[in-house]
Every structure is written in structure tokens, then in C-alpha cells.
Amino acid sequence: MVLQKAKPRRLLTISYLLRRHLATRSSPIKYASFSEVLQLNEKQFTGVAFPLQEMARYLTSNVDTSSFQIFNPNHNEINKAEAFFISTRWHPIDYFTSAVRMDHAPQLSQPEVCFLGRSNVGKSSLIKALFSLSPDVEVRVSKNPGHTKKLNFFKVGDLFTLVDMPGYGYRSPKDFAEMVEPYLNHRANLKRTFLLVDGLVGIQETDKVAIEMLEEFGIPYVIVLTKIDKASKGVMTRNVIQIQDFVNKKTQVCFPQLFPVSSLYCFGIHVLRCFIAHVTGNLPLST
Image (cartoon, rainbow, N blue to C red; front, side, top):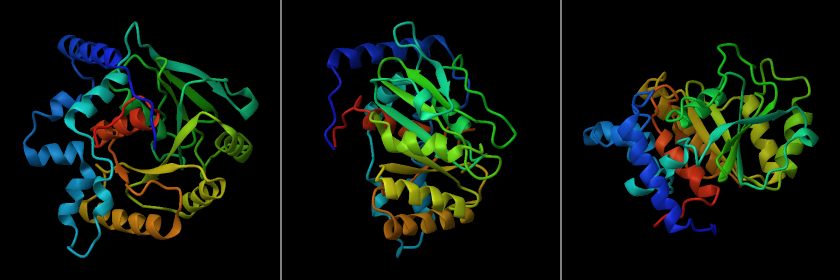
């Protein structure tokens, strides 16, 4: 993958803004800032920052964990990525617009990523966690499944756009396919689709239908395992093994590494921010 290198001056400016932000404003969610995570002991740090690597401790020796660290940014890279998700006067982050059909979607030149998954899997909650250091960004999160009925666009300065997609399955919009499939198949600036899977139950039949669609279209995607704070270690490790096996045997365009997250406690959020910054071409990595 060839990515455009970020300008050193811009990275220095963003690094300065991050330090100023952290010095003047406390995090609205515990562990939202990587600086908080760095203060933890080694075991706690791994569990919060790299939950997939933490799960490896509970797996038997015959389980292949080679894909667990394919994307393994260093601390400096995670800090740089975090700064992209902080809204400032010079780098505003906010809800931009919504669309009910592809022909209503805004024509944007910035790279784009979208979040897709079953109703109530936690798409809006995840986006809210990604923006947790910018609490003024309005991300509507409902307790009722199927709340998102449109494509909701969030602009991250002039760097990239995040899109919250309608959920499929329970209470999905009647015209879900007409809304989502044209977007996924024809959005020229779409760099990666993030498919959210509930960490409590693993891949469901409706998830397999979504995966078949992404595979058929040849759309690069990543599986994000949500709600890992609600599942026991046994349930999580079982689901990780099953999903990893499914990805290895049944997929061609899925990134081989899973991204387990907790939107409530920001577990795994820091690395996910870094991955988004990377695939949108805003953060080259040293390895």
C-alpha cells in the first residue's frame, strides 16, 4: 500500500495542538487520551491499548496469532493519529450532512471511511468514542436499535470523512440496499469499510450476508469487534478464534487483523484511530 506522506510541518503543528489540548482540557471519557493509557502498568496498558495482544495470553499455543500484530504502530504514531481526532479552530471536526440515497451524498474530495454493521452493534457509539477528545462533536447515539436511517457524514478537518451507515437486520430501513450498496460500490474516495461485529455473539448470519456483499464488490474492509468490555474472557477468545478462522478461510479482501474495541472505556480506540489515519493517507508508519 502506497500512502501519501504527511508534511513534517503539519505533524509538528498537530503535535503542538495535542499537547495544548491535553494541558487545558480533561478527557471526557476515561482512557480517551493515549497519555492516560501510558501511565498504566504494562499489563493494564496492553489491555487498553492493544486488547487483541492481551487476548493472546488466554489462547492455547496451537492457535495462530501471527495476524494479531500486522498493524502495530509505535507510541509516537498513536499520538500523532490522536491529534487528528481533536477539533480545533484550524482543524474543525463536526457533523457535515446526511443522505438517504447515493445521489444525495455530498461530492467530497477527501478520503473517506465508513462504518457498517447490524442494528445496535454500536456504530454511532464507536464514532462517538473516536471523537471522545472532541465532545462538542454531535454524534447521536440511541438506546433503540435501528436509530440511524441515513448516511451521516462527519468531516475531520480537511483530512478525511467518516460515514455512519444505517444498520442492517432488525429495524433496518426498508430501502437499506438501495442506500448502501450504490455507496459502497461507487464511492470513488472510499478508502476502507469498517464492518462492526458484536463481540458478545460473534459473526451472525446477517453479518455473513454483508461480508458476501463486500467480497462480491471487492471492497477492502476491516472487522471491528465491539462491546468487548461486556464479554467474558472465555467468550471473547472463542469469538476471536472463530472470526479469525472465518476470515482466513472465507474472505479475500478483509484485512487479516481484527480490531477489538470498547466504546465505553476506549479499549482499542487509540490503535483504531491510528489505522484510520493511516488508510486515509494521513499518517505514514515507520514499519
